[in-house]
Length: 116
Image (tube, rainbow, N blue to C red; front, side, top):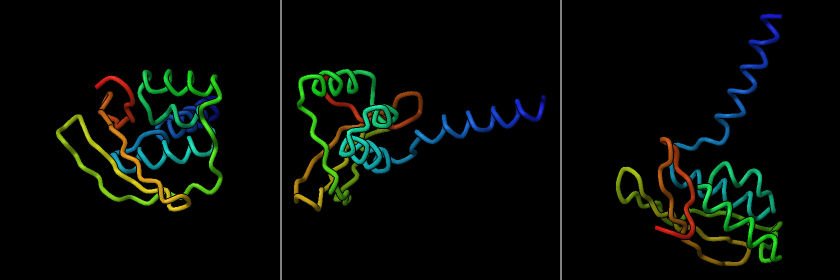
C-alpha cells in the first residue's frame, strides 16, 4: 500500500511540475502551442488566472480559432526585471509576429494578457 501511495505521489508531482517553465520563452511557446491547438486546459498551466478568464470569454464568443499549422519561432526574449518579461515570436505558418507579456506568479513565468 505504501508503494502505491509513493507511486501516486510521484505521478502527481510530475504532473504538477510539467506546467512549470523557468524561462519566459518556454512558457510563451507552451502557451501559444496549446492555444493554437484549442487546448485551453493546457494553456491555463502557462497563464495567469485573469488571462484564462479573458481567453475563456473570447472562446465562448467563438473568437478563438485553432491553427493546426502553427509553428513557433522565437525572435526575442526580453527580461525586464525579476518579475516581468516580454517574448516576441513568429508563427512561421502565417508569418504573424506576436509579443506576449509575462509575469512571475509563485516563482513561475505566466502569460499575462489584459491589466498590467
